[in-house]
Amino acid sequence: MESILEVNQVSKTFKDKKAVNRISFRIDKGDIIAILGPNGAGKTTAISMMLGLLEPTEGTIRLFGKPPKDRTVRERTGAMLQEVSVMDRLRVKEVLELVRSYYPNPLDMETLVRLTGLAEGDLKRFAEKLSGGQKRNLGFALAMAGNPDLLFFDEPTVGLDISARRRFWDRVRELAALGKTVIFTTHYLQEADDNADRILLFHQGSIVADGTPEEIKSRIVKRAVSVLPRDEGPDLREKLRRLPMVSECYDKDGRIYLATEDTDVTLAALFAQNLGVRDIRTEQGRLDEAFEQLTLNLKEAK
Ligand SMILES: Nc1ncnc2c1ncn2[C@@H]1O[C@H](COP(=O)(O)OP(=O)(O)OP(=O)(O)O)[C@@H](O)[C@H]1O
Image (cartoon, rainbow, N blue to C red; front, top):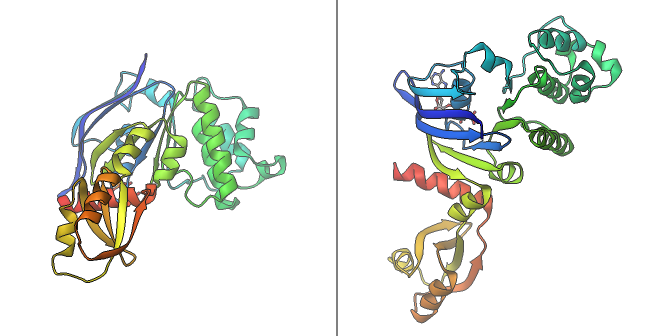
């Protein structure tokens, strides 16, 4: 299978800030990949390096076997970045025509217009006058103008309403079905879970997990047991923490939570030892909470 993207031991340091720290991965054709992570995790910096907009401090990046700035790479790559800046004083149709003209095998104008989701009348409007959502659609069309094999979307759904989001992901799935490779960034585990074939989980510049949504979830979504303290003994949390299979103990919404590898074993021990707790519940860990918990734990571990 053709390797679309290879990132090898890549780091980026801004003055004394290490924004990306020795990341390595390889992406094959036709996958939808989520780069998932909280604010400041290094997602945008990583994408900017893959696009050749930033030079890595160390390491190498190859797209279609060539460096990011190679002309043939540019011709086969499209991007929609966070700020969709459209040229002043150009009408929508003119912007589309201009960007098409940069590419050897552009997408036909009709398809591009369809991808903007704009009405015929809107094509004559100045691009800068479009609403935020319409600008995003135009950005999507511009990313597609060269009929690229590889697409980058940096937080593509921020600010879109639910139906616009759904339309966006439907279009992305269509593209992947045509054999195009899509890389997008997001803060939301749910969005990555719903739309990606593979997730690269970024945290503080490093990739801390790499796998299918199922693999990532099973790694980070732990079941939990939660209790209320009956009498707040001084070492209650420590005793709870030491119960079998418990990996962590934390307070949330007035309850004490025990993340556990095996709720049955933990519950049996909890009932057997009289630890001064009441209202014992088992919880199916929620995805977003687990994600938050994972990134918090990693932060504390540093
Ligand atoms: N040009 C720059 N100069 C100095 N520091 C920078 C620069 N660009 C990014 N950083 C820092 O590098 C880190 C990673 O930033 P980056 O924008 O890549 O994160 P991100 O995961 O995309 O975050 P967000 O989700 O908020 O967009 C941050 O701490 C940021 O402040």
